[in-house]
Image 1 (cartoon, helix red, strand yellow):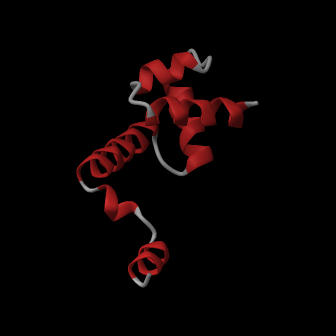
Image 2 (cartoon, rainbow, N blue to C red; image 1 turned 90 degrees about the vertical axis):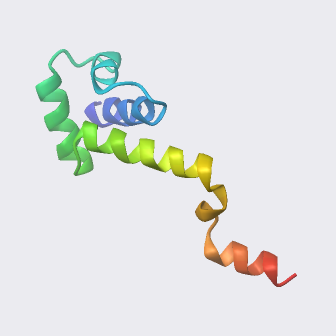
Image 3 (cartoon, rainbow, N blue to C red; image 1 turned 30 degrees about the vertical axis):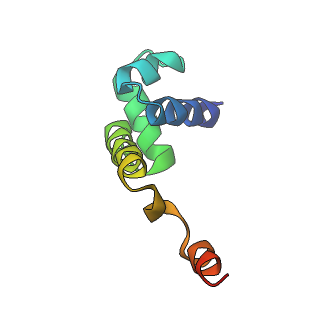
Length: 79
């Protein structure tokens, strides 16, 4: 059950919700216990995860072709 809640929190963080909104949104009452369980299950803190997702989203906006897998890009240029 906790892993499902953390996955939902990850989804919320990817969509730009704050750590506190994500914590409360998935049913945790304590930010400390949420952060601890999040790190235990994902290997990173919710704040670091949110920051990385924000960077990724900004990268997709500014240079979307950078996120196309190389094998697909190579196949498309050899047509």
